[in-house]
Image 1: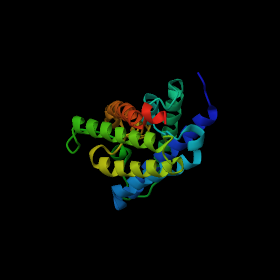
Image 2 (image 1 turned 135 degrees about the horizontal axis):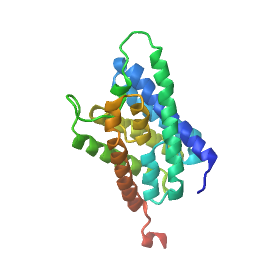
Image 3 (image 1 turned 90 degrees about the horizontal axis):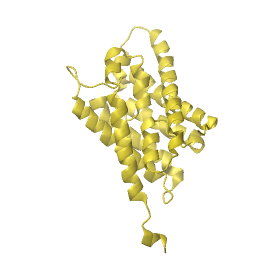
Image 4 (image 1 turned 90 degrees about the vertical axis):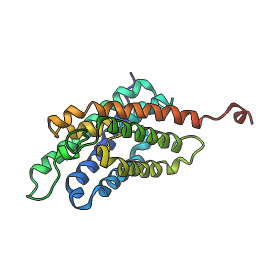
Length: 233
C-alpha cells in the first residue's frame, strides 16, 4: 500500500480545520448568530484548506468524498483506507481541543457536544428516513460539484470556491434536518464527546454520506466523460 505521508498530513490538517469550524461555530457562535454562522464557517474552512493543501492531497477532508472520488475513477482505491484514518484522527483531534475549551467556558448560553452532533429521531428530531434521505442527496450533490469543478474541462483555479460555497449551501439546507453531516469524520468527531445518544446514531452518518458519495461520484463521472465522437475531433 502506498502511504504518502505528506498527503495524509494534509488530510489530517484539512479535516482538523473543518471540524474546528464546526465545533467553534456550533458551540459558541450558533446560540447567538444561528445556523448561518455554522454554514459559512464550514464552507470557508474547506475553501481555505483546499487552496492551502489541495495540491498536496486533493483536499478531500471527508471519507465520503474519498470513497466517492474512488467510485468516479478519480482516486486510487488503495489509498482510501489511509485517507479515511487521517481524516478521522484529524477530526477527533479538533473535537478534543474544543471539548477542553468548553470545559473552561464561563457560564452562558453555549451548545453542548450532543447538540452539535448528528442525530435522528427522538421527541424533536427528524425521522431516520428523512435524515438518511437528506444526507444521501446532499452528499451526492457535493460529489457532483467536486468532480465537475476539478474536471479537465473546468477552470481548476476556481474549484475551491465552488466546493466551499456548495458546502455552505448544503449546510444551510441540512442543518435543520440532520445537523448537516455529509462527512463521517465530522460526525465521528462530535459523537466521541456527545455521549451515548450521539454514538447510537453514528452508524447512519457513515452509511448515508458514503452511499451518497458513491452515487454522486458515479453520476458525475458519467456526466463529465467526453463522448467518443467529441474526442476524435
